[in-house]
Image (tube, rainbow, N blue to C red; front, side, top):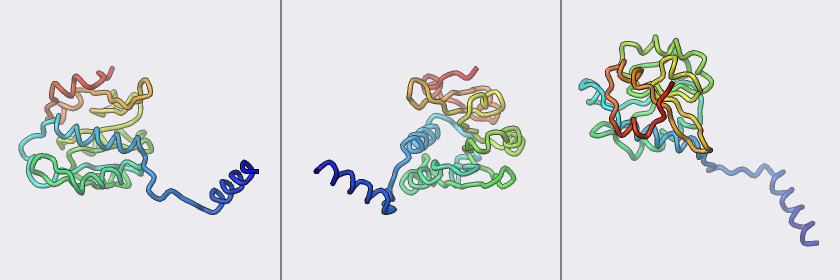
Amino acid sequence: MKKTVLILISILVLSSGFKLENRVDTNSRIKAVFILNFTKLIEWPQPYRVGEFVVGVVGDTPLYPELTKMAKVKKVANQTLTIKQFKTIDDIEKCHILYVTQSKSNEISDVVKKIKTNSTLIVTEQQGLTKKGAGINFIVQDNRQKFELNKTNVEKYKLKVSSNLEALAITAQ
């Protein structure tokens, strides 16, 4: 009898439209923390060290709200952290870090062309994109979130990679 009552209550709760409003996308939160830590382990040219520190996100992803939450309480050195979302590649403006979502990964060559004169770190989440211009690519290895680093691509944009970042990264092939 107790089992039947529990099952009925479960069905009632699930079918009533009950939602977890404050659900956390753990993977997005982890990636957001990684991105904020990248700001400490990469050095941008002098003109990029004044004003706002801009992290851009092109496409839709649960990472954007996570970054936005963190930007309310975090700074990058003495710079205010600002998060901008771009719907299309054409919308991309100058930023320090540009996160290219899975849905925009097939447009990586257009992203590279768009930011080629900027000192922007391109971060992606699809295998093989470090061969096409990304500096950092998120991967899952042994059920853990990790990242690949293509130091050549990062340095191409006049960014300096700390040895600590290199030690944490998986070297991109």
